[in-house]
Length: 449
Image (tube, rainbow, N blue to C red; front, top):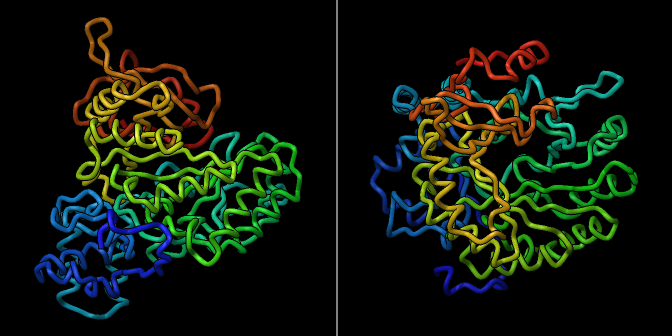
């Protein structure tokens, strides 16, 4: 059955596929043994999970392996560098010992920058009594991230995901927290925080009753500084039935209503990586249901080679999102972790794609910002490529910074057609970027240029 034939109220049951049972997928069985083995090699290092909705309604199986949704969810050989692929391939051919395979996988993973942008070293907050809150991150003054322990998975995994360490069984790499009370205590101690972002994994993997407990703890605390609750989620794209026909869909929508009725803004941070994800009747209906609770849906995605590095597609996606009542929010640059070498797009090309897409949408679609790098110092936007005093340079600025005084200050980097990340750039007109000295002195981080 294709999505054109599917109506949103069919009440399908969720069926998930992981590395353990991916060969049971009928469409995968049609691939060659070599192709299936290559998927197994990559899937032993980078996490893999898909479900029946993605497989049956989003992937065009007549366009394999180029179909964007296929690349977005199924392992591809190129996602591992050649030396890593060969190492895991040799291991799988020589042994079936799960512990040995896991050891080799972990050796490779540790070379893939599992926690980029100082997530583990710089962003983990501490209560005044000295308690480290490993289930939280606090990088920017106004916003803290909260990782409920029950949300450390997703309905399906994106192959580019920078949070891949959450899913591969390396517990020391996980962020997770069970206690909402510690979150409240931290918010009391930090009145500058106005926004709490529930993230994971995906908070919408939780049952509504569990999510409701966290929300009730926050709402009942009546914190004067708390203005917004955000939910970072891919559920609208990968399992819209969460808000339509799951056994607790109505209860989850009621939880959303509780947030908005208590005077808090509920920001639903939806990840849509391709226009296809907005095409099914079920996702359109789910968007209506979520918006009816008073929540605002904002959309974001990285720019990804092999998936969405096309300006026309972005313009159509932003236009469709506005039509459905969503607010285009961010175009990100692929983070320096995992399969960045496979998905990365040069900053020059990223800025060109963004500009060409941006100029094709109406003012309502121009709420989007990008291309933005969520780097160690902060969110850095590539504003453009200009020539100053005969020198070709990138014009950059902070959208967010570890120091709020950095925000919106323009700075310049030498033009480099091959640069794909902030650390690839060299300062123009000087030896250092304006923020480097403070970054090194206060945070112990030295730029690598």
